[in-house]
Amino acid sequence: MGATARQFGFMLRGLEEVEASLTGKGISFALLRGECDATVPELANSGGFGAVVCDFSPVRLGRQWRAAIAERCEAAVLEVDAHNVVPAWVATDKLEYAARTIRPRIHKHLPEFLEEFPELPAAPAGFPGGPDTLSKLVAAASSGGADGAAAAAAAKPALPCGVGSAIGWAAVRGSVKADASVPEVRWLKPGAAAAASRLDDFLSSVRAYAKKRNDPGASATSLMSPYLHFGQISAQRAALAARAVRSRAPEAVDGFVEELVVRRELAENYVHYNPDGYDRIDGFYPQFDNDSWAQKSLREHAGDEREVLYTREQLERGETHDPLWNAAQAHMVHLGHMPGFNRMYWAKSEPAARQRLGIAPAARVPCRAPAPTRPVPRRRPPLPAQRCWSGRRAPRRPLTCACT
Image 1 (cartoon, rainbow, N blue to C red):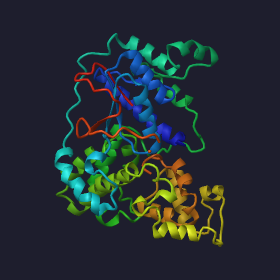
Image 2: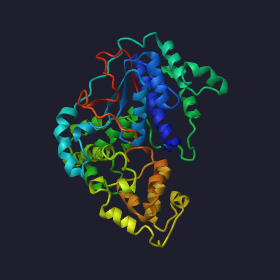
Image 3: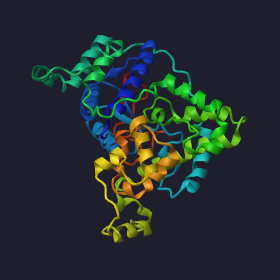
Image 4: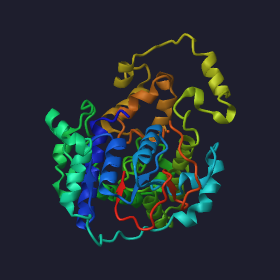
C-alpha cells in the first residue's frame, strides 16, 4: 500500500519490542517473509495449528488478505476487532451517517467492552517440538514451503526471518525494499513503552486539549495516531487511562475520548460498510445512491478552467500559491504528521482536491489507516468480538495459534 522506509521502520522497531516482551514470557514470536496470504497458511498447515487469529481492518487489502488466508488454511481462521473499543460489527450493522448517529450506539456498548485488560501470563509450555522446530517451519514457509525452499535458496539469498531472539532485526530492516527518500523521523520513538510514555505526557497536561487542540502552534494534541495505527497501544488502553484522570479536566478528557473512540470508529464504520466505494469519489455517498449534491457539483465542474494547475511534484514539495497549505505539507514531509486543524484545511483545499489521496500518505507515519474484493462470509459471530472467516469451527482448545 505504498509504505515507505518511514512506516516500515516505525513498525519493525515496534515489533522488535513486542518480540522481546513475548520472549520474556516464554511465548514464541515468529517473523515470516513474503506474501502473508501464502506464508501464513503454509506455516499454519505445516505446523498443524489449531487456529489462525487475524485482527480486523476494514480496508480493501486487509479484507483480501484475510479472505485468501481463510481459503488456504486448514485450521479455523478467526477475526478479532482488537483495535476498536467496540467491534465494528457490534456497534452497528449498517453505514452510519454522522457521529451523532453512531455515538449512542457505541456508548451503549462501552460498559461491556471498555474494561481493563487481564495481565498476560507466561506461557505454560513452549511450541510443540521446541523453538528449532518452529524455526524450520518459519524458514520453509518464508521460502515458499518445503518444496520451494531448495529452489528459492539456489535462486537468491534468503530474506532475514526467524523466531524470538534469533531474529536479526537490523538485518530485517536493512533488507526491506521501500522508498528511502522518506526516512524515519527522529522525534518519534516507536514501541509500546514510548507509546505509554507519550500518553502519560499528554494526560499530564490534558487540560489544554479542550481549548487549544485546534491551534497548530499550541502542541496540545496527543500525537498518539502512529502508536494506535501500528498497534503499539490500543485505543481501549488510552481511553481507560484518560478516564482515570477525568476529574482533572472533564471537558478535555471527554473531547479526547470522543475523538479516540467515537470519531475514530465512525471512520472504521464508513470503510467497513462501504467496502467498494470508500476511496472513490463516485462511491462516497451510497446512502444517496452516489448522486449527492457534492458529487453532482464535482461532475458538473470537472472541466472548469482553473486559475492555477500544479504537478504532483510541486504539490509534494509544497510549491503552491498558498503559504498555509505549503506549510502544512512541509510539516507532514519533514515531521511525519500534520495537526488536525491544518489537515482539514489541507485536504479541502483546491490544490489537494484531485491528488490528496496520493501525496501525504507516503510521508505520514500512520499511512494506511481508514481511509476493503472478494465478499466475506457473513455469519453471526461466535462471540461478540470475534468472527469466523472460514467454514471450519474454531476448536475449544487450540494447541497452537498464529496471529497476523
